[in-house]
Amino acid sequence: MIFKNRREAGRLLGEKLSSGKFGGGNTVVIGLLRGGIPVAYEIAAALKAPLDVALVRKIGAPNQEELAIGAIVDGQTPKVYLNKSLISHINIPAGYLERIEEVKLKEIREREKIYRSEGKKMDVRGKTAIIVDDGIATGASIRVVVDAMKEEKPAKIIIAVPVIAADTFRELKKTVDKVIVLSAPEEFYAVGEFYEDFSQTTDDEVIDLLKKSRKTG
Image (cartoon, rainbow, N blue to C red; front, side, top):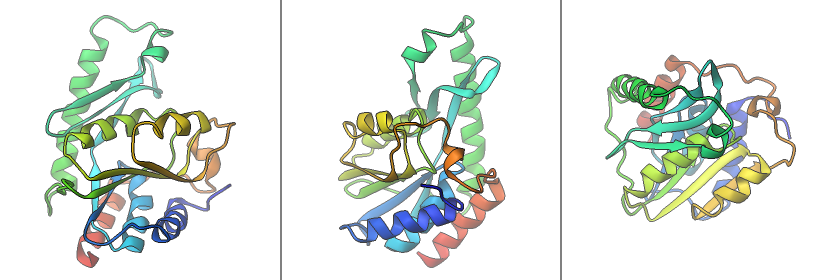
């Protein structure tokens, strides 16, 4: 299944979620930075639910930033997820993980000043939290967001993504109440192969969508 762009993928997911028992005042939609926000915006609009952003950053391998060996998210306490299996096959210099975690956490806190300049973090306690990304390969980012979210005591945690690697789909289903997807292929190389337009989502686009959602919410 190939999507035209993230907004189209979000509309299709929104339609699927609308047919379920989601939406209304007891649901919060949370998009992962940055590509998850256009998808999440459409879902929030379909469900008439508020939209928030998950401030998460991938941890890349040394000299291979695109190879995610983990992720970090800021919350009540910072959470770090590390892919220990992958790390065991890579030469990680001493002190690298500690240094990169500090750098990424600083980046997250700087971005929070930008993205939440007009609004506070959404309270998910007792609500259905729908966590959204534009696609999931290894699931490093989504796992750390889920772990952090559990500390905030939502009634349910739902993961909603247009496309996900089949093996990751099977693993994530064990960690949350439900995983809702449009496609879960066994052969999966990169999220971008499932989009005609997978251009980078900019900070300005994220800010604009968050503002629009607050105005219509």
